[in-house]
Image 1 (cartoon, rainbow, N blue to C red):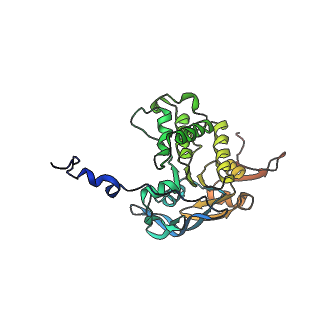
Image 2: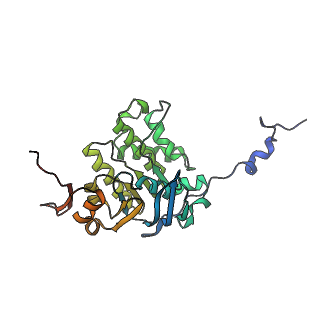
Image 3: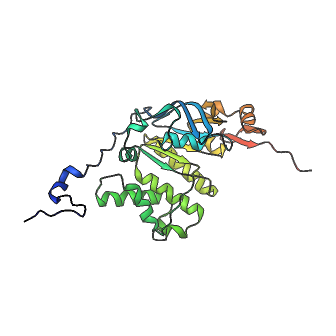
Length: 290
């Protein structure tokens, strides 16, 4: 009698434990202030163009770091490099203390979760199934997955349309579902590229509050923002990019000055304290119409 074989001819008796790799173990919770991502002398090229030109940056557990700057400054490229989705032409990126290329894809999926600028799906998956995709890296019980998925959907206010096809949602609804998927991944390093771009005022605030909550829980959050007011209100640190370099890096109160921002954006910018709370207000200078 011959042994049963798989469709590729591999003996079925060899499938147990030898051909199937065990899922990697998730990392331990990070220590407060622990570097979860670092760029050192980072240069990135896209085609023949040098987009990042010697970036030094550290992302630490327990903080929200906002990447801001004008269009084409390199914010999204830096985020992708920190996620190990773009290779370095020179310099290095470390994730959880190890050079990014040394992590396998399953190991990376347990350590960092990435939200791209736009969420595209060709098939009309229900919203709940899209969020559940964030649980793919984990070897958890169905009951645990259900709880985490439900919590992520509730946090992003998408529970009401859990059964609707993703392709039938508005742009803002898709953005919130995509964020819920990232939250369900439960990685200690969140990398979010313009998560508020398609959202209304209420949900912009919601997203940044969720970022702050994750930081308070000990995670590190890197978020690309165009709204400098949101960055001033919620980020512990801001890195201002200009032409592929970091023009300033520090707390918003130290970095956001009218002089610096006006130079970086090549447009007059005013920075004022809120009359009631003292929070920084950042607004473009405007000339009244004639």
